[in-house]
Structure formats: structure tokens, C-alpha cells
Image (cartoon, rainbow, N blue to C red; front, side, top):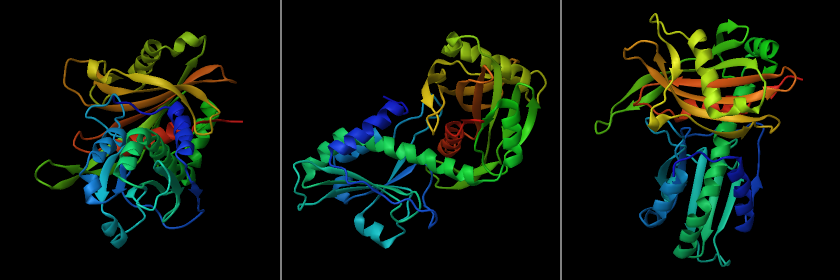
Length: 358
């Protein structure tokens, strides 16, 4: 089953870690060496025999979840394997690191799952699975990896949010605060390109990610365009949070506010079955705003011609003072041969950062 874990699973993860005898070491650093590795990767440290065994099946199944309903598929994580000796000889600052170890000196009747933060780099997350024999480790991977995924998942967008909070975007944020009564964390260089009473569009700096060609091993730079749209309309009752009603309001807003450079085309939602929008309840990072998040694909529509499109990730909530239903909707326009994981994680971090202006 392909899905992104919700807040309930985060709660479950903490319970599981406690049940497995977690010995959590939290060492947050205000400054220090930065993490290495790509967003969306987990470095798995284990002997080759473990990696080649049935355990790898559970690692793949539970740690490489899919963020739905994007096409091409977008995984939360990809796994990168290193043996312990290889790890000791290289850089140890990989952002997400998982040790899977068989230790005959382990005295417990089941494997331990421990997490450590900031071990070799700032905000690095290290998870250790240690059992006295293969069967103990296998059982832990069967039962505990969903909780491990939730921990890595949380830390992935949290790092980006932390970086955005440190970036300087005072002018843009001030405009958003004044018009919508909310604050959001944005990447450095973000700029407002559309400003209307009930609709803003903010562009992020254009980034480049590697494009990989299967079989050739060659790579080129692919431009990724992304940003957020913020819009608002009167809140009347809870029925407005039904998925179909949110989509209807979205399409109306986009039709009149996001035209394509080709006359007659405008941004709309893709409703094909395989990418039909999905949603679930969500709370922001500080858990002070509850609302509804929605993920899907967009396309420029309006004419019977081929047009470009991409992915979106939106968060809807009611502003208690303004009595407005507000949507912060991120979008990504990227080559299908480039990984969308990083830009989508950036959108997730922005949505999680939303706060009400006091």
C-alpha cells in the first residue's frame, strides 16, 4: 500500500520505540558540521549478508513509501547501502543513517531500536537496530520499520523548515502577514509575482537537479520551477472542507488567477483516475493549526491542445479571526526524469510552517 504516514503514525512510532527498549540520545547542536547526502535518501549500514537476505525486502517495503498520487512515482526515500568497513572509511555525516547490526553480546530477548540525533552532524538522524541473531533483527524489521520510517519522514521536512526559517524573506513575509494574517517560512530568494486581494503567487528560485538516463549513466541539469499560491474566500460551514468542494474552489481560483503564457490556457486540476487528488487531516509543525492537506497533479487547460503540468500539495484551514478559508498551495514543475522528492519536501516544509499572526 502506497501512502504518506499521518500524525497518528508518528504517535505510534514513539510508542513502538519505547516498547523496543529505546535508548534515545538527543544532541541538538546550535552549530556544527552540516549533513551530507541527498534529501530523500537513507544510508543503510549493514554487512553484505544482511543486505542480501530477506531483511532487505522489509527495508524496501517499509522505508521506500510513496507520496501519493503523483506520476511518475515519488518515493519518500531511496536506500543507499554501505558495509560497516566502508562507512568507517568515508564521511559519516549522512542526513538519514540506519545501522542494522547482529551483535552476539546483545542480552535481550528481542532487538533494540534506538534513535540518536546530531551524532556526526547537526540534525542528523541515526537509527540503530541491534539484535543478538538474525531472527531477532528480522523480526524487528518486520514489526518496527514503519515507525522508523515515520521518524525519518518527520526529520526530513523539519530540516528544510529549519533552513527556511533562517533565510531572510522579511519583505515577502510582511506582505503575506498583512494580507492573509498568516506567516510562512520561505526559501531565500522567493518573490511575489502575483498580488491580488484574495490571491498571491510566490515563486521560489529556480533550482537544478540531476536527470538520470537509465542505462547510459549520464546526467544533465534539469530546471525545476516551484512556488506557492495563497488564496482565501469566505468560510461558511464545515461542508466546504469536503474534497470535491475544495477542488471546485481551487479550480475557480486558478482559472482566474493563474493563466498560461499561451492565451486561453490556465492552471487546472488533473482528474485522471491514477492521479486523482487525495487528502487527509493535517496539523502544522507547532500543532496550533489543524486543517486538510491535499495532493495531486495540475495541468494547464482551456484548449484542446497539449500543455505542461506538474504536482501540487495544498493545506486548507480556517483563519479564526478573519473567518476565511485559507489555502496555501505549493506547486512543482519539473522534468519527469528528475527526482521530485526534494522540491515536494520543500513544499511540505512550507505548509508545516504556517502560523497565525498574533
